[in-house]
Length: 304
Image (cartoon, rainbow, N blue to C red):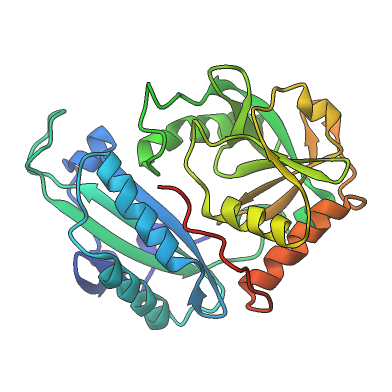
């Protein structure tokens, strides 16, 4: 894969399209040193950015949680995103939108820094997030030694770059141990999510998913809940202790990048991916949704 700083094309940067190589920031930017940076990942299906307005709204909400305002309104950012996708001619791809504090000061306080915004997009190669056959065989997960902080200890409702440090370290350790990803617990010892995706279990035809007390409110998660409601699948949102993994008969992750990704193993618990009707229903429903072959009444704008 070509390193991202060596690619060609156009990136929307602070109000207009610039050459890919010219989308730069200074090494003394506050966002780099103090993690005053937020982002969104958005999928492109058939040339259209999926749930674009919801993602842009969450970007603004994430910035406000970190105590800064975006320089551009939601309409402008949506238009910029469509322009980037059209310029690149992308049909099936991924968009990364960022906003961060600038380089006026390098100290903890940053009340008078500028705010910068960028939008980039690229085609997604097969196997970008998981192996091509992962939907059929499932992925393997291991419980991380790190835990997600609570709202009292960190701005967990912001899709902030700093909140993903735990995920990076945890997934690196999982990969070294022979697993595909890691799951994290909260301060009470209950499941929260994987390193970059929400977690669902199935048990006797019912979906179970952790609360979002310690994490962002996922847009793909909201779609899964809406699909389940449409299909008449009961879904329980509750605290789920690690022992629930042994009581469940299946599991999957969901997120913009991962889409719906079945789990074949979590720690020492193994699941029959092929025989899980609930997971298959959700996978099919989500594919139909992103391909425009099905509609949801209203997945709702996730709470921000």
